[in-house]
Length: 289
Ligand SMILES: Nc1ncnc2c1ncn2[C@@H]1O[C@H](COP(=O)(O)OP(=O)(O)OP(=O)(O)O)[C@@H](O)[C@H]1O
Ligand SMILES: [Mg+2]
Image 1 (cartoon, rainbow, N blue to C red):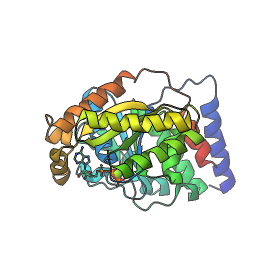
Image 2: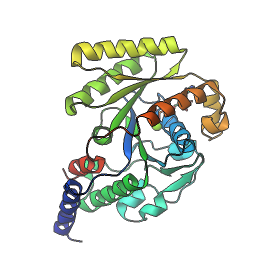
Image 3: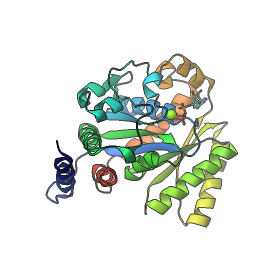
């Protein structure tokens, strides 16, 4: 396909999304992100996906951490195709969607994939096709992003319907979570930002962390973040990671599992809420530059 054909293909897809006679029936898209790395995003994303699937939702988890993709490791899947293969056109989309333990579907990420901004026209079109396919086949599309404020992370975060910013009570994680909220708020008006405190000692500590961040957001950004609750620090999580098994399956009754169940119910209650228009359209606009 010539680059001119590819560009017109992108425009065709964009205009299809914009057609007023085609109501959007796709997935609700939730981006799981953080300022600081290692705060538990992938564990939250994987376990939340398993819980939501157990509640009867069609859930797809897209591992969009293009630096250190590892959701497949957490569920012990050895996969033949990942995001990079699909984007390069070497594997089909179907080959990259795997059934994960816990009843959700996983699209494994690609460590070291080129920056999204540097994808060729062909690769961008493949990425948009993949996103459209995921959007059509799920009720909920969870996107595990990398940490930090890189353009790759922000493209997924800004395109999502809702954003879950994960932090821990550590001061460095809190500062970086605030930086993430600030960047999102500058780039997207009325963004739905939810804050989750992971590895909390107890709910009081988590609540204090939420209140501290929310107070600064209100004062300096003029917005409130929503309290998504917390996941307790739990040694069973570390054990489950070593066993390469999601902790909600490995240890369904542990403290962290109970917290994730609560979070899943919270998210599920919002499932019917009306959404802003099109994740795919927003991603397409971004990808099309
Ligand atoms: N609730 C918890 N209790 C105890 N340990 C936890 C908890 N959540 C996460 N961890 C530990 O933190 C480690 C990092 O978690 P995870 O890989 O999910 O973080 P991440 O934010 O996805 O990291 P990255 O930024 O590198 O993608 C886990 O391997 C686990 O040992
Ligand atoms: Mg991760």
